[in-house]
Amino acid sequence: VTINRKKEPIYSKAEIDRRCVAFEDTCRSRGVRVTPQRLAVYRALAEDPGHPTAEALYARLRERMPALSQATVYRTLEFLESENLIRRVSATEAIGRFDANLEPHQHLVCRVCGDLSDVSLPELARPALPVISGFTVEELDIRLVGRCRNCSRSKSLKRARSAGRRTKTKSIINPKS
Amino acid sequence: VTINRKKEPIYSKAEIDRRCVAFEDTCRSRGVRVTPQRLAVYRALAEDPGHPTAEALYARLRERMPALSQATVYRTLEFLESENLIRRVSATEAIGRFDANLEPHQHLVCRVCGDLSDVSLPELARPALPVISGFTVEELDIRLVGRCRNCSRSKSLKRARSAGRRTKTKSIINPKS
DNA sequence: GTCAGTGCAAATAATTTGCAGTCTT
DNA sequence: AAGACTGCAAATTATTTGCACTGAC
Image (tube, rainbow over all chains, first blue to last red; front, side, top):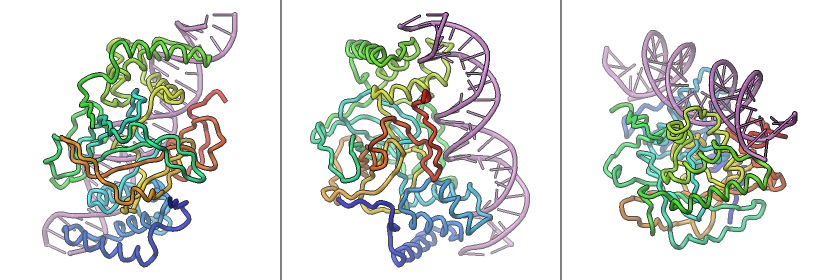
């Protein structure tokens, strides 16, 4: 078991440079513009192993780019996510979806429509909690992220923000369509 | 593999009744009052396998309890969570925490301070994606939820809302202190 | 009767959007 | 030059909080 306690960046300087170049290539190959803002946001995230929030990145970036706006940070992160160049991870402060089912089970999360349903993987009915020094594991939260039946065809990644009952199908990620 | 496609409630009517009684007992044993609102929120969640949001529960509940307020729903859900009577699950629309590390790895989530760090469980370095009919699994997201070293002592569950750099240590869950 | 719990409305937090101007290609 | 991106500020959405009141014990 290897824990990265936020001491070092996820990638070495050289690796980060390489990734920034790859990022530029990706942008160009997809006909998207390479801007200083996009590069800066991408690099700042690659350098920060602490899973920062958009707000935290903005605070750090504005020191070097005072004119940078929050909106750009949000837009850039969304763009990077849609290009699979970064991932969004969930902490405990996730927007509230609740579950009264306390039996060990897992969740199926559709990344297109946001649908959330239960699954039971038999091999995980009674999961062994990994032992990690310096951290008391109380719960193993497993999510299978992918596409539900209805969304298996759709190509775009229009993440539903609030997956309540709302059927606001406006694309957030792909405003170009 | 068993999938619950939201057709039936998680628990049978009888089971829900039993749980509501257990809920009452828990409240009394902890010196917390049993109110119609708390019972209604708990029951509504137990009856809804769709992992509803606070907003969705509120919308459903106010039909039968027109005077119910949103604030009560939020407060009750928080209370139920702190008593381990329900769980909070995360969908894709989680409040943004980002990660540029695309290598397969897992996350350690401290439920007290919200701290998020990387772990690599060797047996999951190259995880086999479960095959589930009617759902295309693209990613296995595993979170080890518990307490980090610093928080292993603290008893209260003061979930950090925005775990940025903010050190707002105001207790949300335990306003009585 | 007491005070924990509620309702209401206002406050805060996080994110999104409209629009006019700017810079990449 | 064209229009994709940006900055700004206002709008939206989700959640929290202060305060006076009410009802569970």
